[in-house]
Length: 260
Image (cartoon, rainbow, N blue to C red):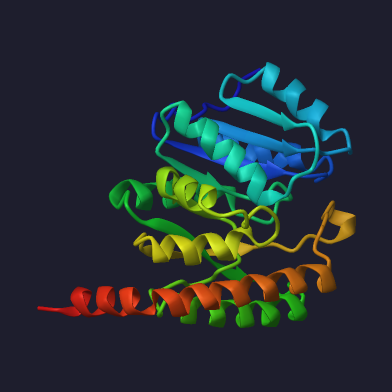
C-alpha cells in the first residue's frame, strides 16, 4: 500500500481551520488541506457532534496535523484568535484560514501562500467565484457588506469582505483583535479586513471558487438570517463610526500613497 507524499513542513505559514459541528465531512476537508500543506491546525470550537474525537484520532496518525479543542463554543473569531495566538507563540508569522465544511478550495492553498510569501506584509483575500448552486439570497446579500467594507476602508481594494479563505499576517491580526472586544463570532471575517486595512495591511485579491453543499452532500450551515444580519448591521454601524474618526488619517495615507 502506498501513501501520498505530504508537503515539507513550513516554519512560517500554517493552515488554520476553525470548526464547529461540521459533521463527518470535516475529515475530508482536513485530508484535502493536508495533501496541500504542512502543518494544518484545527481549532474545534466546542463542537458537540463528536468530530472532536474523530479529528483527535486522525491527528494521532499524522504529525502534520494539530487539533486544539476548546471546551465550549465561543465563535469563529474567538477560535481563530486562539489558533493564531498559539501559532505566534510557536514562531509562525502567517495563517491561512479556511472553513471546515468543504466550501473552500484546498487545492489553492499553495497559490495563496505563495502570494503571501512574495508580499508578507499583505493579507491575501479570496474573491469568491460562485457556482450555479449558490443561493441567490446569499450571493446578493454579501454585496451590501462588501459595499460598506469598501467605503469604510476608503476603497483600499477589498474584493470580498466575507469569504473566509484568506492568508493573514499573524502579528497585526492579533494586535487588532486584542485591541477590541468584537470580531469573536460571525462578524470576524468582514471586521478583520476592515481593521487590518486601517492598520495599513494591504489586501491582495485572488479568485477562488466556493461550493455550497446541499444537506444530502453533507453540507452544514450555521448561518441564521435574522441573527447574523443583525450582527453584521451592528458591526458596520460601529465600523462606520470608526471610519469617520479615522477619515483624516485614511485620506492622508491615500494622498501620500499617490504622491510622485
